[in-house]
Image (cartoon, rainbow, N blue to C red):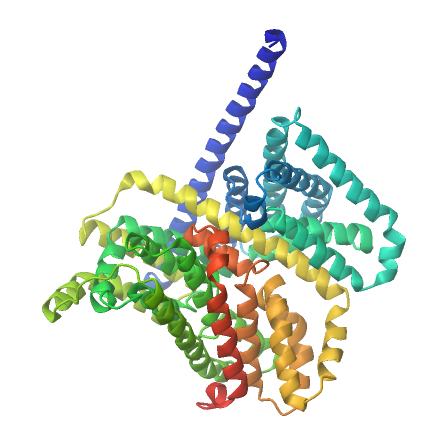
Length: 618
């Protein structure tokens, strides 16, 4: 070995490691500080509004600015830690190809980030003319987070690739990217003439190949959207940045990191243990008992934020560790977590229900009334699957608790059990927003942990904050790139063509309802519920009315179908978000989820076939 060459390479590698280490430590510290400031700011807003009756009109604006910075720094941490959601089912079965596919994924990520550098600065410049209403700050302060976050991710990607610069896989990956890009560029005139057939090329074939190759879902959505805009349309790339900005900036999403913190607090304060011990005393002696607890917990808590990710974050960290201790497999837990989230999409108050009411003119109170029973039908069919699985492979069960023991555990758990009830009640009654309630829940959890259960491990707080930022960044970046991809689909004119085809289906209302289920399962797998509803609701609901289908009935079928697609692998964004929150390998969950998805499909068909389930209580 030539030491004259080896030593400089070793020194360079050491510099890269030190640079990356210090950079990540700095980002972790900033992310943790941002999260603490967010919690303090929102709690101060609650005190001023509801106690002092002097609302801080600027607090929401500042919280929104800090939130997008937190999301982007979290996405950077997720990239460094490999926490962005991806499917590795294929690469795990092809160990010889895994290093090459990993390098190709990194190169494509770098290409995506490089291409966005100019558009993101153009977006920052265009937003400089806007100012916030209360603080009077230039909007540049907020959107600069996108430029900084994407720039840091590019830097980390370059540092990672620099470690592979002498490897054969790196050169092969570069050659593949150049070859594919060259073919698409040469085929540009043909692609422009294909019209909406391009959607199959870019959003089915290319996305499928990227996901199957182990590329993070967020970057797979992003690179294929960029490729579509560059090679098959004339739209500017600033669209990608503006749509990502929109998808990641919705103030309701601030509930995601807050409920993640709340869920983690349930563990370190003893609240979760008290709650789990009480619930286990009721159902621990039943086969699959904690699976029923998870299912019921999602049903009860769902809807407190309008965001499925936030709902899952309020339940999963409290239940999954105990389920693991009792022998439940990670795959089964991830599968049931995803399926139960899909089940609960119609439970009020749901942001999707409110969106449908506003865009298609349906009574929101009627939608709220009609939403609970359809979700209950899906919960029951999932419970049947849980029962069947428990008979075949039953986890550990405990002896049936006595009434005295149950009563004692209930008193101990009362402070813990009151938390979800207060959260649900406050949001349903409109007394506070989801973010405000989550903040109060965090403070409540800390106080209960310190003064009631006398358990609060300060050493776990900083890692908890960093983990929350990382997880939130991974989830929100998927939402951002999925929103950009959704815009590309909507602007293609595909929506009107789809409606025309659906309206011409045979068998009248039955055929229309059947194709609606299929279409919205597909749409749910590539779009968030709200973009899909905004895009297709005004077109499809009048067609449904013309066929004699009640608006509320059709709304329930549409929402549940979208939920099924949203939480179905390999494309469903919600599925990967649920696995991320539960810290479960999506490959394990994907292998176990199909019986649950089949049950959900049966439930959707039952709801579609029996209108009374949706409109019987109107």
